[in-house]
Image (cartoon, rainbow, N blue to C red; front, side, top):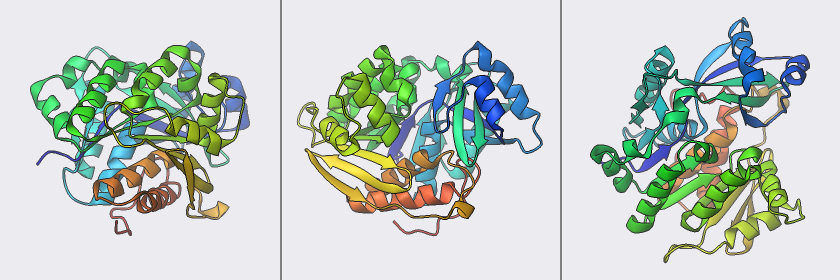
Amino acid sequence: MSPAILGMGNPLLDISADVTQETYEKYGLLPGNAILAEEKHMPLYAELAAKPDVKYIAGGATQNSIRVAQWMLQEPNMTAYMGCIGSDKFGAALTDACKQDGVLAKYMVDASAPTGTCAVTILDKERSLTTNLSAANNYKVSHLQQAENLAVLEGAKVVYSAGFFITVSPESMEVASQAMLKSGGAYCMNLSAPFIVQVPPFRAVLEKLLPACDYLFGNETEAQAYAEAVGWDTTDVEFIAIRLSLVPMAGNKPNRKVVITQGAEPTIVAIKGKVTKYPVNQLSKEQLVDTNGAGDAFVGGFLAALIKGKDIAASCKAGAWAASIVIQHSGCTYPAKPDYTI
């Protein structure tokens, strides 16, 4: 049986450690933000690796969501994932993580580049992400077009990519979204980070894909960054979600669902100009370990419920539950089995 959910994105190994305000200032990092590494950020990876509390955790936004969806479903091979890794020990670690979780990993392997890494700098439980894409940046649409991989795409009911994949292979996203348009499957995307919507060529890809996008995820900061980038002159998250929900759909697709999370505040869902709010699980400050992977986990739980035929309310509930578990662990990690029935 073909996996029901396919994720396509940038596979990364998270190098995670607690840091001081000094590190944030030295590298120009912002809490909750995600950026692509520049030359000035390169020493950061070795600095984190030298810390006694450093952890190496399978990461990459899309891969996190897919692994969480697989964990929530507890049925083997419900999910598949594509992206590019290097032929090295970090790539092997990601392959193992997928195998252990029951995700069908269809990696493209590029021996000429190391597996991508993400510096996860944690300050007061909040994370900032600095990504060195390396091999992840080399994913090619030709890999997706190989017969066995195309079969996985065409057999999927749901395809998901974080916005980060826009910087790597917009061609693959175009092929995937068109395949879902043809098959009647759902194509899902995430705004992922302010820079995705602020950089004009990246925003152009997002806007080109929107008519084929059934579910658009994001958080309040990303939604506000989008509105600012396109000159909407508002910071009202509900209004922004409504406008994004009203962008016309391609073909005879049903109306887009825009799902905006707001940390501990209720999740906003806009469909055809109407907003509904769904509460999230409240945790005490003591229960928080770090926010790394929280948004990814929400998407994973949501998609798992969606594939089980659940409605938006039940999907938001599953997403909120998954996120509440992940933020009580380092990075996108979780107990052996979910204490939750979809």
